[in-house]
Length: 304
Image (cartoon, rainbow, N blue to C red; front, side, top):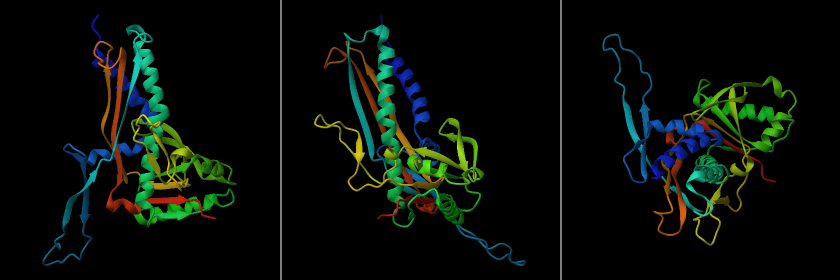
């Protein structure tokens, strides 16, 4: 019986795409990639528009000439990550391959891929914001409402009150927020589109709150090469701090995934072993446009 490994790959890819949208706390950043130009290789071009302001209208000469400049920031994709797995043909036959391989790849994505992508994105936002768009605060139930509200106001003062924002918050800090006296008068629940998934989230003064596990919310990470001498994946970098929260305009972070694929080789094709071979690759990055940095504020715990 012929085995259509291409069809298997499509099935797995479709299911994994759905799952990653559900599991990533940063999936909403992918929606901004529609404005990016990609012509191959490791570079993308992100559009940036510059405009002049109003001038006086002259009743004899009419309108003053304005100017608009459309330019492109060139960014490099830096995260080219992948892994291959073998499922021995004696353990997995054609009848249970889909179930077994689906379980392996689903767990790999849930336990390894999703945490790494989230962690990378938040640490890159911190890296871009740390010089001029960061603040410090030690979270307590007594004053967390005031501080969070003040940080939101700071961003809104820079980008305008109608600009949609997102609060990405450390899960441990979110627990402090939940215990703050009077928090319920600030909180409501509404729909939020996290990628292609619509979900119910808490809103703080109508700004959605996205809960991020603390392990994914540090300022810096080391991404292992994944050679046979190590376990691969990622770890928090030496001296990395857990962030309290990131307040960010929804349009500010642009996440791009250019290669996200599954390849399957059956045992008769695999030249290295009598086993099913599963390849997983993810080529991605995230950036903040130069003219969007005012829409970002990172808050970290105050140093003792």
